[in-house]
Length: 208
Image (tube, rainbow, N blue to C red):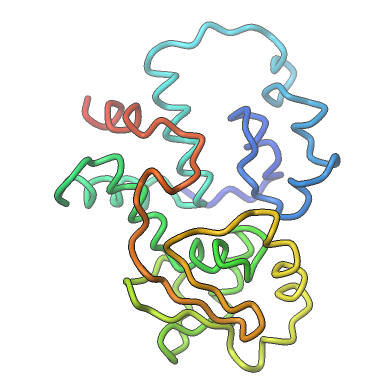
């Protein structure tokens, strides 16, 4: 399945929640979900009876689109989570949270995960002093993530750090905004991750 390249705001409208795919736009009144809170398309305002399968599918799509991963990638993460000790749904979220494009977003260096994926691919970030250009790279506890010296003056990074305070802070991260570096202190606890998704329904979807 190819990566979606259409208007990302349609994805938020389809899921009925803000997925924060457009960065700062999602925090303003310009967000389409503010005045068109119904699915896109000519039949979007119709009342449709959702099946049990449909409910589980929507939860899976929410989580997949939230982290910006493809279907096959998501399935591989799920199967890896099943082989880990603990609850599969919680393990799945922990794996997704460890992705480098998500970590730089949580640290406030980029305004969205999509932008984080692009910036990582362009080589703007280092992990433990070495450049990493793979968005799916899984950060480990104790890893130091920082912006490359040549990239520290980029306007988009400066603006994102200024707006990061509106997204809150996270106990598993330690960020030095002035030095543009952060430490991934530990794998986050599931209850600390702010997610509008019922992961148990995703486990049920893949278990059938």
